[in-house]
Image (cartoon, rainbow, N blue to C red; front, side):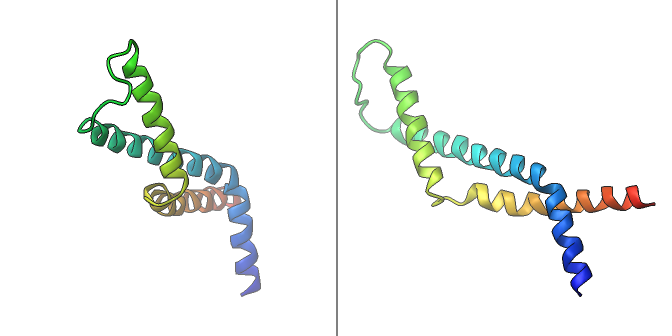
Length: 103
């Protein structure tokens, strides 16, 4: 039992850089997803920047900041759900690569 646990820890340690990159990518995906939702929802409301020049840029910046804050709180959970699913694939690929190296 202990050797199996130790092997699992080693596998996770070897896959750590890939898991870190995966977590960053899924978090960025969630932010982009939430930004798209925010952008579409804010189209139905009055533009707080009015008719001033460059209001589209200000809207986009406001949508980005709002999306980053909303996704950072973890309330949506899209990024974490994706990470849980995809991390299993990363660990399986890492285990397969280790098995190939041993043989």
